[in-house]
Amino acid sequence: MNALRAAGKAVVSLVAEASATVVGHVLFSPVTVEPSPGSCLGVGLAPLAVRPALQRRGIGARLVDSGLEASRRAGFGFVVVLGEPRYYQRFGFQRALTEGLRNEYGVDEECMVLELQPGALIGASGVVRYGPEFAAVAAG
Image 1 (tube, rainbow, N blue to C red):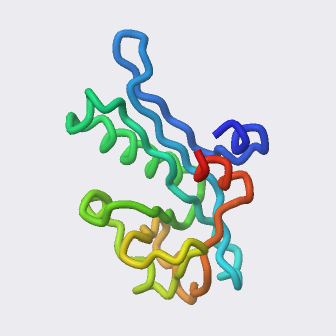
Image 2: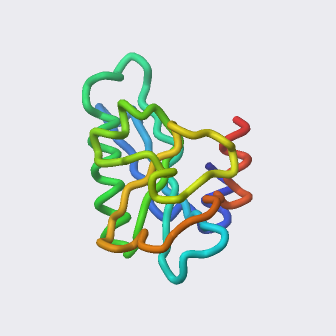
């Protein structure tokens, strides 16, 4: 996450606290679609983390909802996520392949997309790519 922040690519970063202790965090960073769908800007949701002892209490859901709204207000057209379909479908995410979007990691059902601005995904197709700084987050 530090590499994303240092590069100015942590466009939405939210923290949940309880008793002055960080209990959860979500980050959104820019993604591209190659070939580009035009001027539509998208973000990737990752990572999302909640302290294990506090999971299943709605903290993650509140972070995702708040992050999606902040991304919408910031003018992003869509959000992609690589994650558990049953979890992310509750927020409106759908399989990205149904929108013609693939991903650089080669996963299928776990790659999902949510349109934040109506029509943002019209004509979009290609490979979703996270910024090179994301590799450091994905690695550890």
